[in-house]
Length: 456
Ligand code: PMP
Image (tube, rainbow, N blue to C red; front, side, top):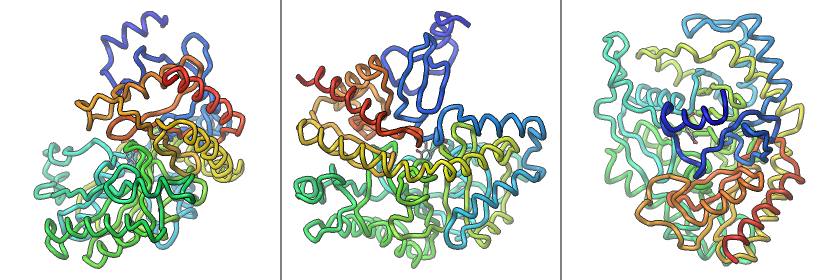
């Protein structure tokens, strides 16, 4: 179809999505870290379809896997098993620590977290779930309540489920730890995960969570605790060191399960470890994963222990597309490419280089409040007070004027990145894991120009 027709259809025939740019960007083609719009203009993709294009757009090995598996077996549904699923599960489990070896394949992060919530409730018999403000775990709630078929409702009805949120342990913006860390001479790069004595942020936030727990959840009645190990949509928020470990101990000593949402942070993106929860010295009871798992192919997974997985026998759960043979073939290929091409190490090398350059920019621009993240999951928080406060709480990339202008300017110069945080004032960089230092140089040059255009 023509460019003009697509534009008019965007206005009239498709549901409006989160609007990234003032003028809709109509993308047409992708190649590794590059995207091309309908008119053939090239963009460096530093957002990777929201941390999803792990190994690169249209990576030849992924195309090959899709083509080959499509010609062998394309779909069987969750009612049958097939050999590709076992091949994939074996490979995925080899990446998991501890007793995390039972896998349920689904199609999206929301589905994975729904299932994790159901598992936590069934396994513990409890209905209270604890999480952290500013988190993002998906949007598919309430469907269990909507489904009316009696056999499918068995044990699944979410009646009485109660969700609590502890204060977000954001050491930059939050009330504990932020500015001190920023001013500290050693905290030039990562303003959080600070374990220095002067910063009691981890203790304070932990005590606040314990308080919520004590007052709102009857002892021994917690089903689970959900957390991302770095909050993604919330604006690349890292937690102070030691915080998650203590929360896990609290939840477990009260009989609850700990769920790590590795939807954005998994698959080596943060560089140091394959799963980012490993950098906190914790092993969850349930891990949910999506996005990078399929390089853009719709797939996701819940991985847990055999004992917790058996709790599902007392309920009904079904998924038509989960574990689809083509998805499994893609999954196998993604894991192999990450290893064969050393992409986790590349995330660490290129990410560290990128963080250093951004920290250099922060020293020059007072409006850059914070630079944070790990590997190729990086956030740059702007603090020019230029946002429209009436919109706080709605993640809309057009909310913050400075970010919106800078982002549009970068678009014109061929650079894409994301936006996050409750004030939409955090630039988010989560590119395909194959980006190079030259791509970072390009990003920095374009960002500098856009910052100059806006602020000078
Ligand atoms: N968890 C996290 C950490 C996410 O970032 C997202 C999506 N942004 C989800 C869960 C939900 O995933 P999906 O959109 O695939 O349902």
